[in-house]
Length: 444
Image 1: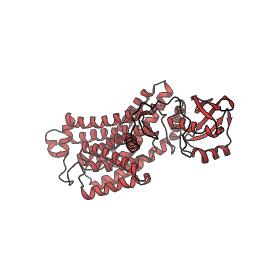
Image 2 (image 1 turned 180 degrees about the horizontal axis):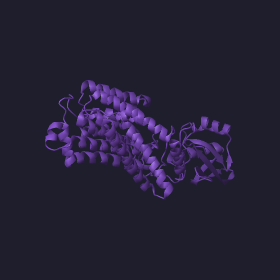
Image 3 (image 1 turned 180 degrees about the vertical axis):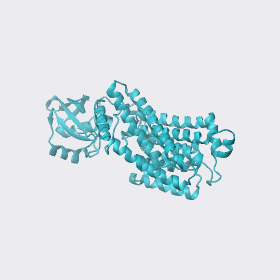
Image 4 (image 1 turned 60 degrees about the vertical axis):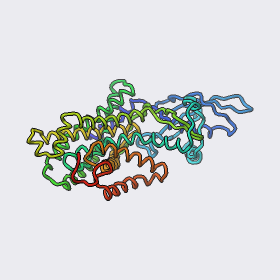
């Protein structure tokens, strides 16, 4: 009953947030316009905005033909939401001049026309690209792939830092950090939805609320995990801790499923208008303000954690416990308090990574943390697990590896390649490429 009430409240709150249409949705709507007009027509887009009902995109355009007077027409596009067989945000129906298209006609339109690679009519609201620097197609494609990989670099850096922060203290791997990122993503959506339903806010304040709520919720759950689970395993070996955290990850994933349901909970797109940076012969290199902002914020948080460990009193205590906990205790360092704070910081970093995933990609399901956490573990091992700076570099390396693989190799084999990279690293250099060649002695 509690999970049902939470889901109902969340849906009502999200419904009150209004609808914003991103660039891909506007493009999909424009792509359908030529199919509704004669082949010799010239389509001129005049504007776009909210349709007759919330959640409907209306585009006003003018049809010009050589032998007829120009005619102004409209197209209304409906997009799929949660609980539908289509991917959220996909075109689910349309109406031309206020007349809805039948399901059979729309199915034929989507199957035989919308799925091709034809270019839609030019959007007059798009920024001009004639002044942009002209690059060779290969260089432009590489630049576009690199820009697309920036948010992934920030996400992997934060999650890998969480692994390294805990492993550097006790040599144990906590396999719940991926689920903590999913928890942060769900908490961010709930927090933003509730705040927007109670008071009007700007998109920038909504992003700030998302980070604050996600970090707070993830940190509180991390403290509970350390106090009620990990503290009882202080004297246990690594295998027992590994099994316990696997069970905890499954429990946390099920907890999220019961709380939010099996459907994704999405944040409305904000600041995602494309910024053209360069052009090639056949396409324009673009990025988005929110992508750059999330990348800068994630990498700044990772660098801030490194600086905090190097310059603060807690950082000195962390290094002392990591080197020799018993000797540190003789000098008055509370190893248990150091562990608790490290776990809270690590889980907060995971929550921030979950917000970045949600803001950039729209949402993150209850089971989305497993793959993300496993890739971050690969990054931590690659960078020299136990070293937070090395883990951050490992996150950047994994993002660059995925970018290079996506550029030249089949996309569906990318995850297999990342996991194979983990196996190769453990065989050839167990201490990671940025650490020692061996795991022992461990440098932190």
